[in-house]
Structure formats: C-alpha cells, structure tokens
Amino acid sequence: MHTIVVASQKGGVGKTTIAGHLGVMAEMAGAGPVALIDTDPQGSLAAWWNERVAATPLFAQVEIDRLTEHLAALDQAGIALTIVDTPPSVTPLIEKVLKVADLVVIPTRPSPHDLRAVGSTVELVERAGKKMIFVINGAANRSKIAGEAAVALSQHGTVAPVTLFQRVDFASAMIDGRTVQEIDAKSKSAIEVAILFKYVNTQLRKINK
Image (tube, rainbow, N blue to C red; front, side, top):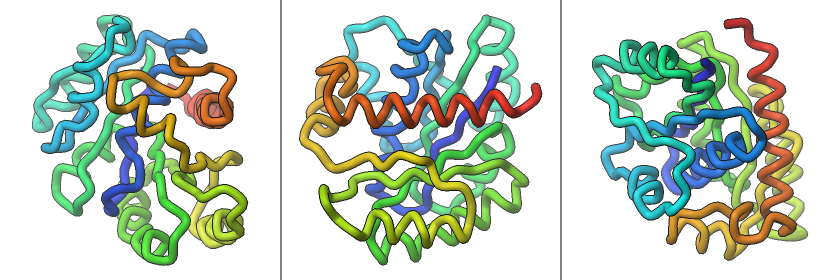
C-alpha cells in the first residue's frame, strides 16, 4: 500500500479538492481500492465524501496517535492507496502525518504570497526525508504567472507537468460530492486531473515498498 499526503501550510490552496480528485481518479484508473483520510479539524474532505453517492473511494476514520497502526490495518484489508488531507497549519500533527507518507503532494496557487509560504512546508517535508512534488492549482487562464511559479518552485523540488486552472466545475463538484471527471470526463479540468494522477502514480511506482 502507498500513502499520499496532501500538505501545505497555506490555506485555500486546494488540498481537499486535489485529495478527493486523486482518490476518484485512482479508482477510475484501476489503482484502488482507495481510502481517504481527513486529518483537518475542519473536516472538509469528510464533508465532501459524505455527499457522495458513489461507493468509492472509501473513507477511513483514524486517530492520529494511532495512524501507523490504522494504516497497517488498511493495508491488511487490501487497500492499495491511502490519500491523507491535512490542516493548513504548522502543528505536531503535520509532522506525525508526514512520517507515514510515501509521497507528499504540495499544492500552491501561483501568487507571490502563496509562493513565499511554500518554504515552511518544504522544510517540514525535507526534515521528514520524504519525496515531494508541487502542484500549481487555481491558475488563471492565459496567465504568465503560472509558468513563472513553476520556475520558482523548481528551485525547491519537482513540479508536476500539468497546471490545474481555476474553473467553476471544480467548485461545483466539491459541493455535491463529485469530481470534475464525474461531471464531464471530457472537460479540460478532467483532462488536467487525469494527467496529474498519471504523473503522481508514476512517482509512486518508483517507490519500493
């Protein structure tokens, strides 16, 4: 079993959206069973999952202090991939979650303020000795800043080869427990998510378990 942790010390960067979309895309791609875990006290991922009609991905309720034990149980139960959403703050909780990660996905919006905030997250991930990738999310169409952000982030680590652009369908999907793939599999947003998952999955396959 592999574990993806979606983390950022900056709020509003789309962690929950990306966690949910990667989970559904993994199931669609045959990379499941997938279990989602929400460690954010706000419970946004749990709230989204509770609105879902589809039976997959699964949702796992865990105790942070027993996270390693819970993950072992999920592995024994046949779960192939767990995706963990995290709160936007520097807390001991984040460090505990990062310890179990095989891959850390760090979403960031392409703005100077967001890019400046990336450093604290990178520091935590590096301290944990984990592999990480950046995902540029919420970019405006035809904006040069997304490319500039990719260049800036590449100085810290690997940047996913696809940008998630700001579109209404992402917001609409998160309201009713769906994803953009489930709303319109041929939409630009769905194609971007599919490319992102393919890249993330390739990175996971390089990690020996």
